[in-house]
Length: 222
Image 1 (cartoon, rainbow, N blue to C red):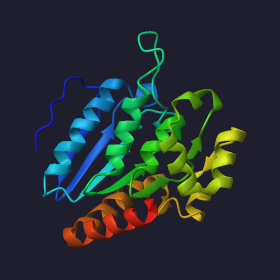
Image 2: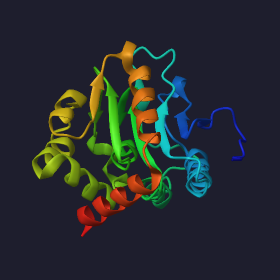
Image 3: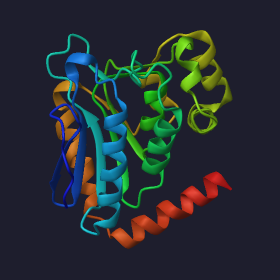
């Protein structure tokens, strides 16, 4: 597989034994995603989707050097991009949700604002303990209808209202109890747990996992 890389700050792509790992790579800036990251991710999703050797896609983040690990601080809005491209972010989450391989979000730090949409768009989610979800109200203009729908589907209407309207953080331990996360693991065991789970999924018969995934998605969205 070939993916063009134009900047050292773009996400990193690694591949081994059927598992492709995409790692957000701006730890000094809380891994805020920019338009160039989203375009890179969209093109990478297409490459991975078309490669039959890819059975699992892991979405994670580089949190090296961070005092409090942050998986993604949100969608960066700058003076050069004051409104941001809402449609681009929404399209990226939609493309992730529709991928052929099984997608696994390895939440290595807390997540803020619309970045939660990328987390919920994955098929499975694992978090490092001590991480949380934050949905500050001032970021609400970037929340698409699809994001609201995905949040309600995973958190339930009461959980979604609490997340959006109270401004209070929700711990991943609480979300695991709701079934949103497959596991919440100590930071020192996190990488090993994610690797084992990804390899376990990759070892399954791909035609079977893809047909089950499609059937479940059809049921959930019907």
